[in-house]
Image 1: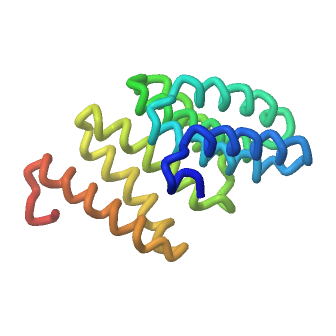
Image 2 (image 1 turned 90 degrees about the horizontal axis):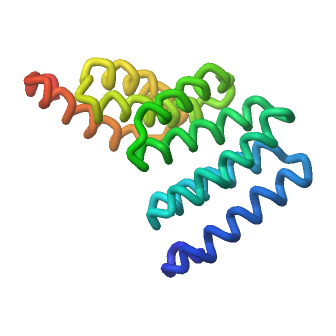
Length: 169
């Protein structure tokens, strides 16, 4: 609600409080998902460094308790590092997250796959980008995430255009 009214700082602080509160109650997946909101707010405000520090601390606490929750946070850290201009660290984080995210967390895997694909996109590796996004697109379709799938299709079309394959786009 606060993010909608432009009070992003307060929203950020509340999200951090929520992540800590969920973790204190032993609700590791909820804590990791609260960090997803922290990541979104950081991307909106440009406060990447603070969110990376928060996520790094949360990841260290989660890794001992719940590998899947830790992998969600690691994937979000990868996205933050990508948008902070550190694609190599992003690649490491996202690859590690994808190795650990279980199939039951299909949407989290798909989101991590899209961010990992974006690393390839920013480097101009269109074929690798398309391979990774196809996997994510399949997950979105199965889960009924039509809007997310549509947005991904638009981005995939851009890659085909960059490759000179406009008829496929």
